[in-house]
Length: 194
Ligand SMILES: C[S@@+](CC[C@H](N)C(=O)[O-])C[C@H]1O[C@@H](n2cnc3c(N)ncnc32)[C@H](O)[C@@H]1O
Image (cartoon, rainbow, N blue to C red; front, side, top):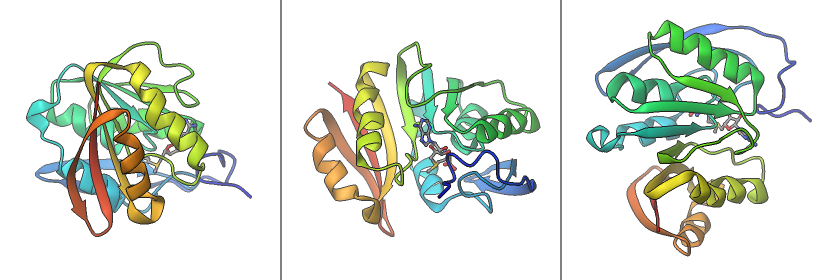
């Protein structure tokens, strides 16, 4: 069975979507074989609408960038330096195309989890993959500590059906955690590196 994060070989059928996040207008090319190809995911929207942009500075990693909405929006609205990674080659190519389409300068590269990540960040921001299973999800969430600067923050969105309550209590063992927002089962979580 193929998943959205491995099926680079499904037939391409690109489409353009227009998205407004707060007052920022963006356009994205999406395609078969990537996450939320029909429009901005509600969880991603909730995450982006609840980040205080004035705090976003320095180095930011968009983990699991997909077609690029998180990193591209943050580059449009802040002065941060943005890296974006994904395991899915098609997502990486689309994110690059979308960075050009929206005239932003971001650094996008393929990486399986943190395999190709070499620096530390002020923020790691993610709508993490859930269907990969708990082991990989927890590797993403807890290895993030090695890629965050001191006091760096991991921001994530997770749905209660994706295990938000368990993830929240496990994050609290290793990070200083704040629940920023709960909306329709989606939790926006800020986990600060100790
Ligand atoms: C829930 S989607 C979010 C995509 C995009 N950020 C958005 O909000 O629309 C999670 C992303 O994580 C990527 N992913 C899955 N496993 C990964 C891994 N091992 N390493 C890096 N990225 C991975 C998927 O390809 C997918 O694009």
